[in-house]
Each structure stands twice: as C-alpha cells, then as structure tokens.
Image 1 (cartoon, rainbow, N blue to C red):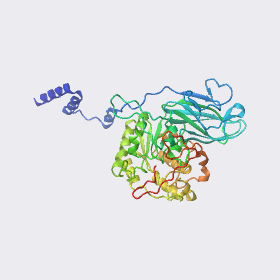
Image 2 (image 1 turned 180 degrees about the vertical axis):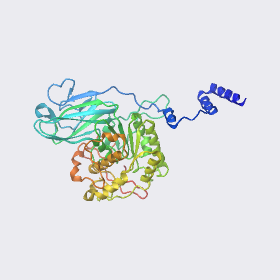
Image 3 (image 1 turned 90 degrees about the vertical axis):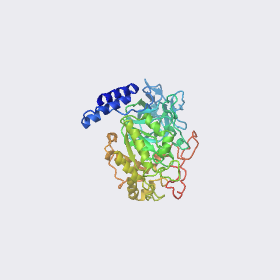
Length: 490
C-alpha cells in the first residue's frame, strides 16, 4: 500500500514539474549500478552557454607585390597603396617600400607593415619572398609583434614560400539576448595601445629585413586550427616594439603552421581585473574543443597595495585559478598553469625570490585539479644563475624581459609543453632542440635586439587611441613600497 501511495505521489509531482518527477522516480526505483566506464559514457555533456559568435564566411585573399598587371586571382599592391578601410588592404603609414628585382618584388631596407581587413578568427598566412640577384634574410611578425618566422635565409636566385598560423580578434563579444546582463565589448585601457594591432579588424604582417624581397601574401581561414590562448599581465603580453619583449609574443615562432597563439595578456592585469574587463569572456567566446588556456598570474595579483584586485595565495588566489580552469574545461579546452618568472636585480639579473607563496599555491592547484603545470619561476631562477655575464641582459627593468630573455623564457614554455606531453607538442618546430635553463643561449648568439626595435610601442601610459611612439622605451618602474611586491604597472 505504501509503495502504491509513493508511486501516486511521484506521478502527481510529474504533473507539476517533469524534471522533479524524473528525480523522484530515480530515487523510488534505483537501477542496478552500471560499470564505471558505462557511467562515464552515458553521462550527459555539460551545457555550454552560447557565447561563440557565428562563423564568418571563409576568407581567401591573395596579394601580389610585383609590378605590372596583377596575376590572375590576385590583388596587386603598389608601393603607394596605403591602408584604407574601404579598400580593405594596404601598407600601414610609415612604410618606405619600392619596386625591386626588376619589378618582381617589393623591397625595403627598413621594417614595414602590410594589413588586410579580415573578421576575427585563425588564419594561415603564406608569404613568398626571394630575390633573383641577391641573398635575403627575412623575419616576419604578425599583429602586435608576434614572432612568426625568424631570419629565413634565401640564397640569391631562389624563391621560398613559408606559412604560419595566427589569430585575429576584436574587442566585440557576441550580442547578448534581450534583458541579459553584461556588456558586449572588452574594456580597453591606457596600456592597450602597446598591443593595439591585436584588437583591430585587420591582420597585420610585419616584414623585417635589410633587403626585403616580398613577392606575395595569401591569407586563408583556418577555423579548425587549435588555439593557444594566453592570459596574464605585461610579462606575457604582445608588445609592438619598445624596450621589453615577452615570452607570449615569441612563443609562436616555435610552432609549425596549424596552431595559432592568441595572446590576451595585458599590462596591469590581475585575474580579477582580467575578468572585469571581459578579457576572459572574450577568450571563452572564441574557445573550442582542442584549444589551450595558458594562465600566468602572480606579479600583480600579489600586490596587497592594490586592494581591489589583491588575492591571498592560500585562498582567493587558488579559487580564481580554479574558476579559469573550470571555464576552459567547460568548452573542451586544456588549461595549463604557468608560474611567473622571478624578478631579477636591475643590472645584474640576480634572482630576488620575490613571489612568496604564490608559485607553491599554483603548484598545489595543479595537483588538486590534475592540470598541466609549467614551473617558469624555478626555471627562471636557474636561468638567471647560469647566464653569467648575460644575466643582466635577460630583463629590461628587473621585471620585464628583453627580447633575449623573452626568447629563453619561451623556450622554457616549449620544454614545459613537451614535459607535460600536451597534444600541441606535435606542432613544435622540427628544429627545436631541448632547452636546459642551466645552459642558456648567449645574448650575442641570438642577437635579437635588431628584430624588435622597429614598429614602436613600449608601455608608456598613452591615452587609448593615441598612435604609438616609434622606439619608445617603457617608463622606468618606481621602487617598490613596503608591502608591495610589485614594481610599477605590469
């Protein structure tokens, strides 16, 4: 009799709310427990909010940089073609280019930038270059200083074709449903002009060569390419010229075509402010299964003198890390935790061991959440202690890396990718040799300075929308105040 009443009660509840009836029925008649594997297979996938913008039409652009009529299916770019939004392509202001190699190329002795209007997304960029009578050495960067191809040497009389994959984004987010709370655009700030090309609706390629021999550029959509998203502060952000260069903007050069790096790191950010500015939302709106989210937050989060964004290492720091991890996993992406590089004494590069309990707290979160972990903090200390006379050249100001330091840190990240056996390791360039921070490269051997003194930028606090100042160096960091482990705006 009791069983009949219970079933009747369940049926009545079903008439009120079907979801509650299912729960009640499950409790009333418990099924036999299936094997663990069957449980996992039958478990419904988590519902993901529809935050992703609709896919844009595929892009297939071909630009011809030779003289004379354009080749079939291509758009000819004359040396006088300055970028215009209505045309959707052209050189950025300041380019000093001319026709070269008897009309076969566009040439210049100074770095120049070419842009094409595209929607946000991932793109394969194929560049053809080479001179019939002179050897050339060409470096290619994308967007705000991302190193894509480093010193490609082409003998006289040869033409080479190289492809890289890069990411383009804008501040816009998918339109919200009526009455939904939130904003539809990332809040850019005073430091964003240093990475302004990361946020426009163009794909920009920078050509750096003492004798450029550009023949063609092709741009094609690559929607299936996995994306490595980077979240962090100024020690990982893209930097368009200026006195410091991060590992985030140098990481792409160590990947083959087929994987894109979307560096969303920004000066001054913390995990809290990164979320408040909707930078996390922006990454999540583009994130898909098979992507990665690399997190490096310590420098600013640890500043007790910044009360609105300070997080304590054993409590709120760990909690915020877990939020980022959960959001990435919800979209099928792989989170990777990266401890921030240590600061070094100005001039000497001696490690300061200044991050307190934060690196250990991140390590503990990685263990608790079973997340890939790259201990850049420990590797940087080894690097500082092993670089000898070059130690003082790794950092530009005690906190931010030079091109030399950023390159070595990027190698540390690549080694971390390999050691964690991440799937993206299959995209590491074939020529990469395992890197031991106890045996670093010399600054002279890399000689990266000439590649990063071209298109201006730096971290100087300019108003949003102001043009970058070519060659501008970052403002000097003030001495840290008591209780403030940070050195100025990062």
